[in-house]
Structures are given as C-alpha cells and as structure tokens.
Length: 190
Image (cartoon, one colour):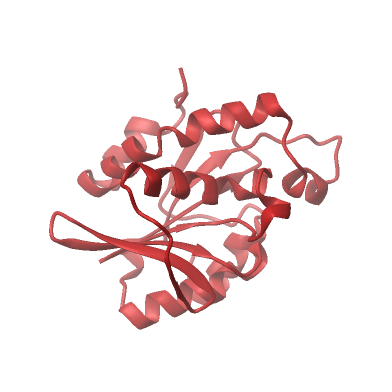
C-alpha cells in the first residue's frame, strides 16, 4: 500500500496560492484517473484506487499546512503504511518555478508542513516531490506563499501540474532513484 499526500491549506481563500501546489498536483492526478476526493477520515479527504494489485491512497490533509503531520500520521498508523511507501508533494521556495525536485530525505528547509510531518514521523527519511514556486526575497515569506499568484505564474504552475499523471505513474512503476534521475534538475514544462 502507498500513501501519496498533497499538501496545502483547505478552503477557497488559499485555492490559487503557492502553498497549495501540492493540492493542485494531486488534484490534477486524481482528475486524470477519474477519481474524486469523496472520503473523509482523520481530518483528511482522500480517495483510493488499485494499481497493479496495490492499494494507493491519495490524501489531502484538511488541517492547515503547519498541522499536516497530524493527519498523515493517523493514516500511516491506521493503514500500517511503511515509511518507505509515503510520498509527500509540496511547494518549495528554493526550487525555481517550472521545476520539481525529488528527494528521499532531508531537512524541511523551513517548510512548516514538512516540519510538522517530520515531528510526527520522527524521521526526515520519506520521499517527496517538491514543486518549485521560486522565492521573492523582497516580500514577506508568509505573504508570498499564501498570497494569490499572478496569472503568469499560475499558468506555469498549472503546466507543472499537467505533468502529474506522467510523474505519479512513473513513481508507481520506477525505482525512486530512476524517478529522481528522470526529473531532477530538468525543466518539467517545455
């Protein structure tokens, strides 16, 4: 069983913000598979499907970003999911807009959602896809990540999320090393 978690903040207020890149990515994948987030449990909305005889859960925590770990750990414990079978998808200030970065482990990089996940997992060794949102150091960090994105930037983010099906199907079929080799440091959009 695998757990794929898209991070974001719930509600219309945060819909087109940089911090909701994980939600946008997982939504686009669900749409490509004709899945709906129609189940609720442990402060999360989720959907399930089978891929090559393996159950896959797509999860969107419905607590705010900085409490994402509280939701993730409940799913991990309830379904007895191995740490190696968790993939977290989130925004990343240190990656340019239009790129993604895949990692096995590492620090939270100051990302409050990842900090909370690491504190609940008692580990920073979980797979992640980090979606680049660039960093505008002239703006307050919080205002930048939860502020509405300009249309041009939103269009670039949507081009990245349009690749969600390809990337997540590759994730389900490839080793993570091969997945990192395929996508790291490359433009996801053409």
